[in-house]
Image 1 (cartoon, rainbow over the protein chains, first blue to last red):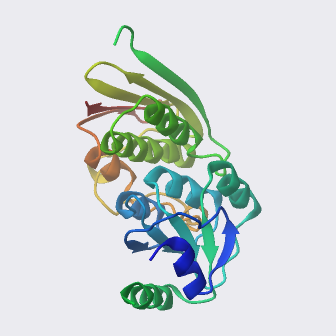
Image 2: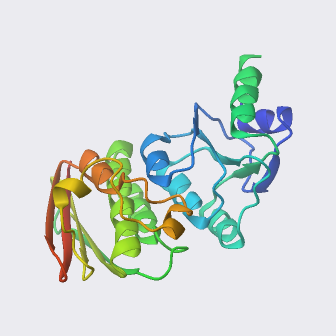
Length: 110
Length: 140
């Protein structure tokens, strides 16, 4: 399942970047940036409730496939600018982190 | 390689929004130079953590990266308060970051441990009241 299929299946909002032709492998969920820095792997989906510009820097450095903001968190303006500048895909959902993890797991299994 | 490649950055101590810019810039340069992804990842993580530390604790500083034939050397220098107890600071989870910093997602106490974990050599030269210079090497 590629990113645009997942975005559609989970009705995620696209906040920045695009989902076309992007393939994701694996998921990391967490909010502490040093932990994320260490554990987000290439092409992972990173689920977090943090929404500042530093999230974009970590996503860029770890080469995450996309950031998914949980619980309807809104990306701060400077973070949105950074996401656009660095070509980082940011998605958003009203679901909690746990609900997103389960939904992604179920969607990927279909 | 005929001549070593060098990058220099001034790290702004008051700007959390731009923190990480030097690391992102180095990552792009290393990718352009064709280094393998694992090397780029190691350098990126170690440098980002160091950059953030300089912003949180030392009001900024300088970051210098030198690429030689057999290693990438990262030197982070600041004139901050210094580290009173390096052994304690190296423990995972130990942090002196303030609450407002933690609210941004920092202060997990993983900065220095990550820097050591992702580099092949790390040396901390610090003096309380004078500053800190951290030299890290990633072998090629």
